[in-house]
Image (tube, rainbow, N blue to C red; front, side, top):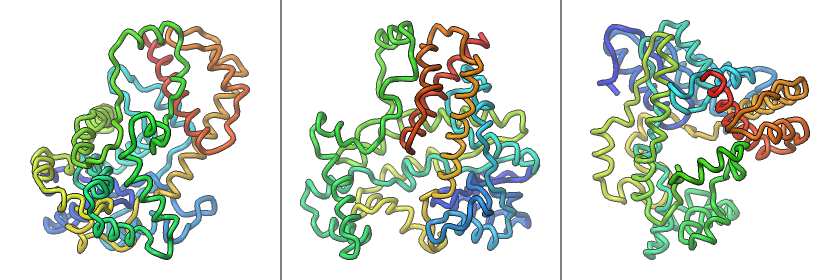
Length: 376
């Protein structure tokens, strides 16, 4: 983190309330204070506490964020993302900037520009190695008869007072990764956002069928080390870095990601399983190594942030539905089934959280493709 701190420009930091960004914020602030300065600001996607987003108690990530920033004397910028930011994202040049699609960062970039930030530190990528969840390690412990370690993990998850939480943990993290492929797909813990694709035209389907497409996400197996290495090689880390770098150019600053430093990754990958994954508890290494530095109550439930994001998705879908009725999507696109897209917008109103997330994801991909064709 210290090696990523410049000496000649103001520095900002993401601070979501999770382990990675919070630790980066704390350590960078203290290092800068030793130089006689400090972070110019910390940035979260979570909205400010007000009548619409009231304090939700212990699970509210903003409690940790506010406490950390107050203690460090760092100004805090709350999230300002709106439904209209989806349209702003669609207008970005995906073919030149990459396909990372988190529109929440667009308003953060404007905030950082207004603050005169020269470098933005981010904990992005930390949970792939530094604070790895250890997905698959509980299954490895189970397969190898490490009963005492599993008991420790179960106690940490909920113990006797929360038997259903313990049962859920043992099933999801211990048994599901051991299942054969066909059965695993039925119980896959990751929801498929694109079961029918993003409204592909026959031309798009033919193109997809002619290519050797590999799945971007790998199934969880009873080997956390293998899964962690697969995620590092997956490409999504570099993809978001490339996109955010392109987005921030006009704002006059650059992103830096200390937790995916190559030397750090190589060191982490050299450690034995017991140090990285412990007894199956998620983020074992980071929590134990930096226990004295991390604040109490640190979590990454993102309850308020996810509420805002869900509301923005729903508001955007309603906007698109009205646009469809007014003829916005009448123009043909060789890659999309526009008739099906229009019908989905007008007639298929989502009724629950999963439907809202899935529909918004499909439409975002489709409309970015349409915008790219119109540009070219």
